[in-house]
Image 1 (cartoon, one colour):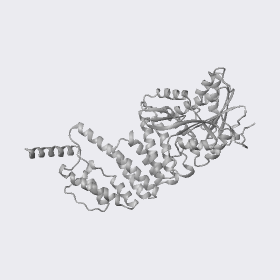
Image 2 (spheres, rainbow, N blue to C red):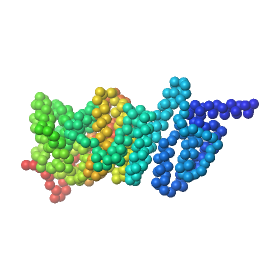
Image 3 (cartoon, rainbow, N blue to C red):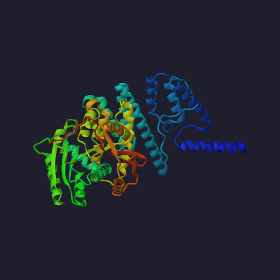
Image 4 (cartoon, rainbow, N blue to C red):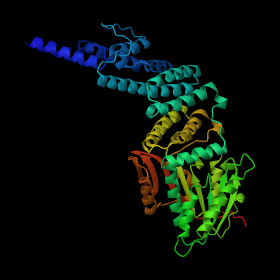
Length: 490
């Protein structure tokens, strides 16, 4: 009786394994376990990093649920020059789909998940090959990943993100000198606008900075905002309207906007200034505008800004300071400090994409942008969300493809910005409760649950679930040391 019961349990176990796609009998699991232990020991004894990298990269093309657990272990062992003969014959084909539609759906989902996992691991292996200079092997992995994309949904999730990173790797490997996307100011403006509309990150940056600037200008009758990236002037209508409602009347507002030179006969900066001037006039705010055309922030000089000693100055940098980390951040922060600003608002990506090692940078970027795309997909569908995704794709391409001065997306976390800004002679200002309330209210405009605003030592971060994605901070000039002077344009 006990023997019959044992045989029945064995058949049930074999049936469950077969149903899950594992082509192995329960009686053979002990042997498989022994081989897996041997595999672990073999891997631990490999001394050559090149050998183990090759083994891992090859193994990533296999999956135990697809070809059989024992065969998968055998493959790894054979790559490590271990001779193993298992007592069963396992096919390398994917498991046949069951006839039941519900089980078919489950099996397809499993295959897609397995392919997604393999994509991630192969991406990391490919990045490691690039770091080691083995571009031929990296190219072969890129071809393998392109084939894997056929087994995943590339319209969302890891399939979409992996597609962007595979494209960036291909650009870097096949044409290192021309890897970056060609860009134009007009294209950048269009993509920026769609990204602004699709998700709350840029709106959070603008609202939080505006609230801090508004509070810093309290009691001042002549104020001057210097915007390091005017784009379409999207940030400033809200501030103009808030200043118009200030008790005691609005101050006189000067806005200096930095932006790229126009590619044609148009003066784009002047056109944006004219629209803002019209808005300011309609709400009785005295307003003057000055455009400073410069391709790079490091090309801007203090004298171009025409700062007066009678003004309360605000310097506004929305995701711009990281662009000069490779080409003169100390000089830029130095002249910012020399203007003696009442406030400096800084918003930056909460990421670490500025490490020297390519593999570390790549891995961090893959995790970061996977989270960003998850949050973007959760927002209500916009007709042109694809253009917002293209905005992120160009960031990814710059992080992955470019080196030297061409690599401008050098994101660093808040902790490093705190250290750097303090060293430059700026001291932190606490973003008050009003900024936190406004940021929290902003999220109600987006139907997605999962966005979260958190306070971090006087700064604010906006993230997706538990991952902060951008950080906003405010600073002001520390008292001048002996012998220091403040630069003003008389």
